[in-house]
Amino acid sequence: MDPCIETRRRLIKLLQMAYSGEKSAALAYEGHSGSVRNEEEKLAIALIAQEEWEHRQVVGQLLASLGEGPNPWREAIQTLIGYIIKPACYLSGWFFPMLGAWLLEEMNVNEYATAQGYAQFLGLLDFVAELEVLSVKERSHADYFKAKSLSGQGFMSKAFVQLFQLADAMRNRFTYQK
Ligand SMILES: [Fe+2]
Ligand SMILES: [Fe+2]
Image (cartoon, rainbow, N blue to C red; front, side, top):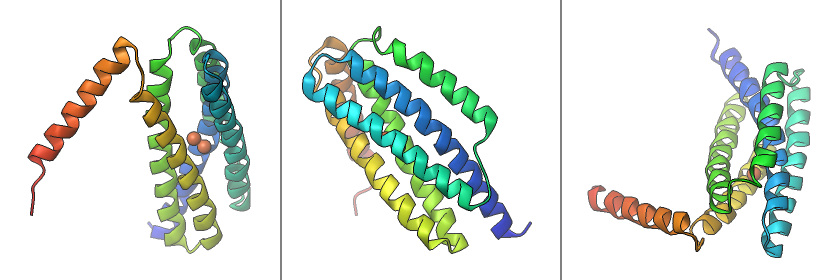
């Protein structure tokens, strides 16, 4: 198969995933923002939710400029996921939504970086620039939730930090040093 056709197909699929994923993330963060008590966290997460809605608009425009639109199944599934997570944030305590958000944002960073690679291959330079902005913003979201996840004072947070530090120490111990 023509590599350009295949790469274009992959880019469209990834953008459709991102478009719908932004919706579930925005809905989830609306719940997350409502569920935390700390005012700084409430405002920061509400701003992140707003930014996810904005990302969705940008990705929608990229899809439209390729003559494509959202995938209806992905839309249905991610909307459902968003509406499940939104109220669940009120029941799941402080730590797990922070950790879940961190992991989700790390995936988003990779998703946009991969899409950027496809766009580069296809010579879509305006896409590359837009996707770079999205990727950088998702990195800032990931860093925020990472810092939060590692700063918790509850039992689960502290146990997780211990595990995280242990995994880091083991990775350094077994990484080949030149
Ligand atoms: Fe986003
Ligand atoms: Fe994000």
